[in-house]
Structures are given as C-alpha cells and as structure tokens.
Image (cartoon, rainbow, N blue to C red; front, side, top):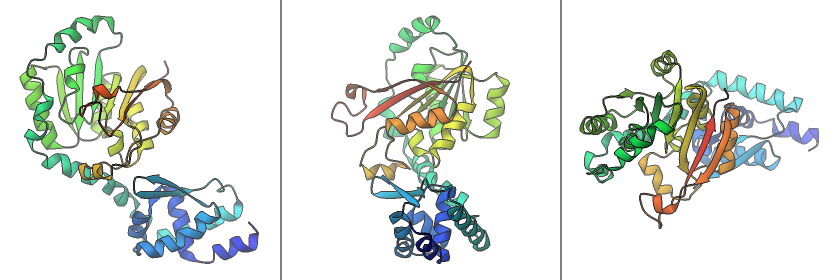
Length: 317
C-alpha cells in the first residue's frame, strides 16, 4: 500500500498498541480488550483496518477469532510502528498484563477438573484389567522403557497402559482433586513404581527431577495440548523432558466446532495436523508418524463428534 496510507493508519495510537500486542502473542479480540481496558467493539474497530491491509492475520477457533501479526513485519515502517506501540503498551501497563491474560486461558480447565466429582469418570476404570498382563508380557520387546511421563494424567487411565511397560512413571497434573483420584487407582492397581507430581510439565522441580534421571524415554501428552494457553511453548517444554532418542506422543483432537467443550476447560478446539507437525519440528523433534485414531476406539464410540489424532516424534540421538 502507498506509504502515505500506511502513515495515516499508524496515526492512531490504539492501532499501534493492537499491532504491538499481536506481534507479541496471538490474541483474541476479548483478550485485547482486557489488555487495553477497552470495549470489544472499540477493539474490533481498531483491528479491522489492520486486517484489511494484511498487518494482522486472523485464525478461527470455534466461534472465536485469534489475531497475530502478518508477514510484513520486516518492513522498516512497520517495525517502527510496532516499537512505538510497544512503548505505549509498556507505559499504560497493557504489556505487563499479558502473562495474566494468557494464564487465564488455562484457569477454567483447572477449576473444572478440581470440582469434577469422582463418580464422573468412574466408568473408565476397568473392573477386570486382564489387558495389563498382556501388556506386561509384551514389555521386553520394547526398547527404552526406563522412564515415562504421563502429562495431564487426568483420571490416570493411561497408567493402565504405561505401568506394565515402563520401569518408572511420573503422572503429572495440576489438579489436586484429579491426582487424588489417580492415587486411588495407583493404590488399587499396585502400581508402586508410579509417582505423582502436582504441577505443570514445565515446573522447575519436575524438570530437575527428570534431568537427574537422565531424561524420559517417553512423554505422553494425552488430550492435554488443547488445555495449554501457549501450545508452541507447551510442545517445547514437553520436548525438553526427553532424553536423546526419546519419544513424544501427542494425542489430541483435530479441529472441531463444539464450543460446549470450553465448559470442560478446553482452551482450543482441536488442531490441524499440519499445525502440530510444525510445532514438533520447531521444538527440534523429528516427526515419525501422524495418524487418526479409529472411531471405534473413541470413548463415545464410532458416532463421536470429535476426531482423535496421534502424533509421534523423537528427539534426535
């Protein structure tokens, strides 16, 4: 676009702030309104002309629209505009509010799982787990099975799969109520080699503990990525836990339109295959496979509205 039009566009300080904030983080209109202490209609008014000229790109997530800086950030005039917008955001405190707004994305999920009654998922616990013996019999065929990390362990169902195969397992969850239910499962199963960690996968205490063990052979992130406020940062943190040659397994949803899932604390409504692959590569992992989970294996059966997908990646040796 002509430079004179660009200068006119940058004449409004509010647009500069929107551009600077979206250069820092992908944000929704409501999050921008919170950061700028402004109304959503006013923020939308500032966003529209920036989108029209390609300075902002939009991505749909269910009924929400997220905005990020476009591919024109190498333009010197745009760089100056972002720098000025950042200065304004530092001055009014909007930039310092960013961590709190991002953290709020995950807060609803923690609250949901803290109050979920124990009976809500009781049906997921097999009463006669004969499959554990079958898995234990296959364990010697698997290389690298010293340490597995179950991220976002939830009700601990995946421990029934990992415990017969790995010598040590750390089940990680931020919800104390969830971990209390997992502790009951661990006790009932006699999984004495399973330990619980209350917190996040990027907590310093957990990272130091796993580093002391030489890293994890497997990090299993089962339906946890859609709860992460920053998926890219989450994948990097998960990759950080792996030993050389270790594997990261991500099990999550492909994109869907079930906004009702937000009531269960979901931050994102699934991820495209290409997006997760990109996140894995950016975390310096090699993508080994990507495949859909057969609908018959979904907990709701073949008629489930959500499509499950798995990604397997490896940290280079």
